[in-house]
Image (cartoon, rainbow, N blue to C red; front, side, top):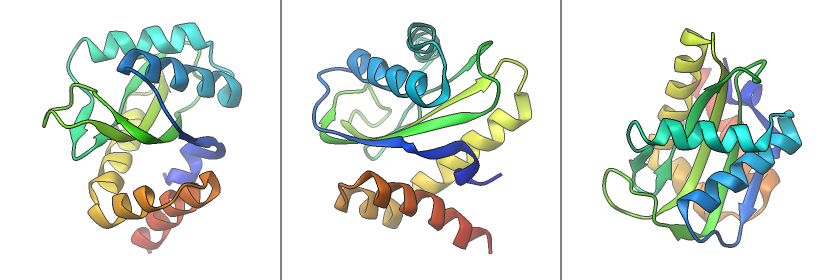
Length: 154
């Protein structure tokens, strides 16, 4: 599995401002509806339910919200670079500006975990995060995310 299998170019956005984690989840739901056909209300509810189990803000300005949904036919995701970091309740209590969201079918156990591990490994790399923060073009962000993994796998 590669990030290019999960992340379509049109699912990468730069967002100038979101005022809260809840508003961020609505933004993610809108993108997943537009790009992957998931019902946005159900996507937001699934993210909120998952977040109630524990924070998906992993630290250093990165959040990995994820959920399983009956409506999801495959593991898919979206990426947001926030121009203004948002208070997310991350484990290190720092605001978040890089958000990679994943959705998986309810029955996608191992596949969902592999995708989450791949995204987590990618965004733990400080040089990748620095490149993501230094760019404001969605196509460049997509290239950074997908090319980095391809070269790391080689």
